[in-house]
Amino acid sequence: MTQTATRATDLTSMTHAELVDLFATLDAPALTEMIGEFDGTPLRQPDLVRTAIAAVKVRNPLHLWKTKGFRQIDEHSGRGYNIHRWAITGRLDYRDPMTTRIAASHIDGRPAFQLDYRTFDTVNGALNLVDDVRRVSPGLYLGFGMLGFTDRQRSVLQPFMLEATGRPYVADVGALRSEQRHGAKVS
Image: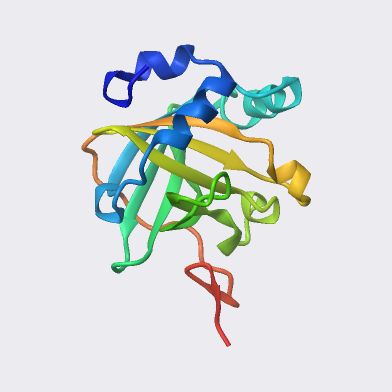
């Protein structure tokens, strides 16, 4: 499957191994490309444990993950959030903030749009969650979340897809950890 021929429907039908192989062929989007809201879809997980985690965290029918939003702060960094929708009320819950940048992927060392949750005092930050994202085609992106306390735990790749919506970024949520700014320690 060539990069230009890949569509959202292709990503949802690919095996985990195929998604990992595809990611290795993709390029990082520019920071300026990742502005606004992007609808999210969890993809095929690598094992039963991560499938169960995804079922609770992002596929939970009572509190469904639906979107990531991003804005650029300067030429090297940005911020973002996740949106979940409450099933009973339909209310949108803006949460799970992150800082963003183009950085070496934790997967293969090549550039990726990186979402770093560790810069916030949240559950995702405490779990050392980092997402690496690359462009599949204009407006379509493949990402992998990595979380855990050990290298082994962080080596388990949890794939997701992002699709550009044209909706604007709403507002920053959460406060950066006092000792960190954009992923770097402040002395």
